[in-house]
Length: 267
Image 1 (cartoon, rainbow, N blue to C red):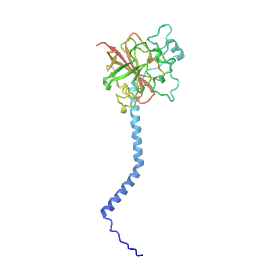
Image 2: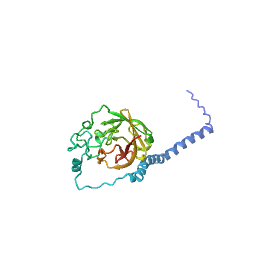
Image 3: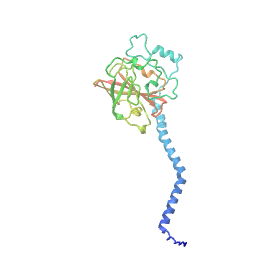
Image 4: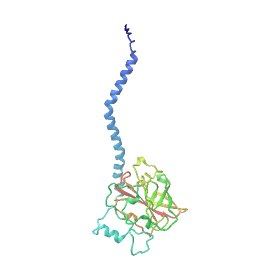
């Protein structure tokens, strides 16, 4: 058997140069991988941390309310004071809509029922009415006709008006809850982020509510923050017609509650 070997033609210099360049590129990229990973990680941390830090140093400083320590136990105050339902029959025996949450560990805040400890379901405080839903718009935040459910629970599906608080246009204050996320992920059409920019509202901004075929115009007059166990935000003061919007702050966290107060105006 005879074997014949034929010498392969020399590889063109251009091809050798391209191969060497490709090998050098991948080696260079491999060496840069740790730097790239560190840079990406730092960018993500900054993108998440900067909005929170900025909020804490600016908006939060102006929105904090002084909290006085009462010598009387909080439970006794709540029992005596109560969070009044507008449908309470006996004014001398007010019902408490909710009590403060004692622990926030592993709490699902997409459910309004987890924001407070409910002695009784919201449904027991909702006044008899054929109206169960209405819409809310905030032109400054590009929020248009988002759904509000009276006495609802799931904040992924709509805003929720806490059962037992006044309806729009009535004396007292509807108290509406909504989600917030980091501002860079704000989407006025998503209920998971709809209230993210509430802290940017200032005195004079307009909130529009369409309830039972009637359009109500509210004007913002205050923004402040409270701790998660402050349930005074549910109180009803029947000498005025207000609107209360509630979300978690800083946006994207559950540390505190941001409260927007607005007053009904006659057009």
